[in-house]
Image (tube, rainbow, N blue to C red; front, top):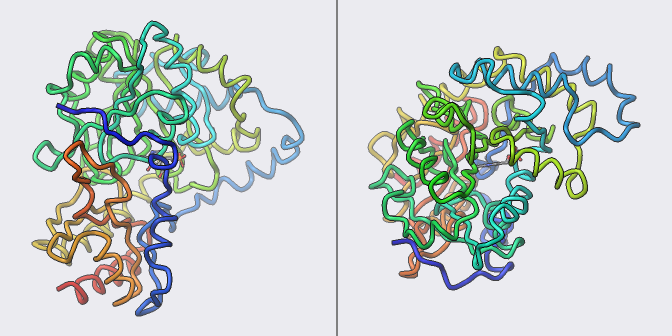
Length: 402
Ligand SMILES: Cc1ncc(COP(=O)(O)O)c(C=O)c1O
C-alpha cells in the first residue's frame, strides 16, 4: 500500500535533476566530444511553415492576450482533438473545454490550486503522483501545501501505478492524480482499460485525473489511447478528467512554450478564473503559430519517422543489454545499470569514458517508505538527436559498458 513519505519540505522535494547532474559531473572531463542525451529536448525538427505566421502577427506582441486564448487557437485544438481521438469528434467545445497554456508544465503546476479548492472539506489533501515522476507534479504538491503521495510504478506492473492497491482513505483525501501516459521516464502507456479504471476512481472519490499526455504523439506503432476519449466513450462525460497536451514534443517546439489543457468544463471554468489573475497569458503571436502547428500533421509524422530511426538503432545496438526494451511511447530509454554500480555511477563512467551525458534515474524519483529509490539502478537516455548522432552515442555507450 502506498504510504506518505517522510520528507515533504520544498527543498527536498523540488530539486532540478539537471542541476544535480551538473553537480555530479563537475570536475570530470568528457572522454570525447560531448553528446547530451540527458535532456528531453527535441533537436532535429523546426516546422518551417511557422515562420510567416509569426511574422504576420509580430505586432501583436504589443497587446496583452486574452487568458482564454483566441478563438482560432481554441478551435484548432478542438479540431485536432477530434482528429486524434475519433470518439471526441465534434464533442470538444472550443469555448468551454479548452484553455491554452505556456507549455504544459506551468499548467501542470498551477492546476493544483483550483483542484484543491474543489474539495474544501478535505482536511489533509493529498496529491497522487507516480514514482518516478515529472518533477513539476511534486513542485505543485509542495507549493500548494497538499501532501504528495508517491505511487510505486514498477516494472512488474508495466511501470504504471497499481490502482487496485491504493488505500481508500488516501483516495478520499486525494484532490488530484497525475497520470503520465506515455510516461516520462519509462515510456509506459496506459491502456484504455487502465484509463477507464483511473477515471472511475476519480469519479467515485471526486478528485481530478490530471492526464499528462505531453508525449501522446511520440510512439512507435499504436497511437496511445487518450484519457478524454476514454472518459467520453465510457460515459459521454468529461467530468473529473483533464488532459494536458503540448507542442514541445509533438511538434519539436520546446522553446515556443505552448500547450493546452482540455476536459471537464466545470474545472476548466474554475481554472480559467484562477488563471485570469494568477497565470501568464500565451502571447498572441505564439497563439497564432500554435493554431497552425495543431492544424498540421505532416511535420508530426516526419518527427515520428526520425524517432523510429533512432529506435531502430537502439533495437540493433542495445537488444539484450541493460534490460532494453523499446518503449510504447515517448523518446526515452530507461536502462538498468545495476551491474555498473547504479545510475549515478554509470552516468559518471559514460561521461568520463565517452562524453555521453545521461540522466541518473534516481533524480527522477523519491525514496519509497522502505528507503529505496526506484530510480537508483536506472539511467534515462533521450533519443532526441538526429539518427547519426544517436547511433554514435549508443555505439559509444556499448563500447564503454560492454
Ligand atoms: C512528462 C512531462 N510533462 C510535461 C512536460 C512539460 O513540457 P512543456 O512545458 O514543454 O509542454 C515535460 C517536459 O519535459 C514532461 O517530460
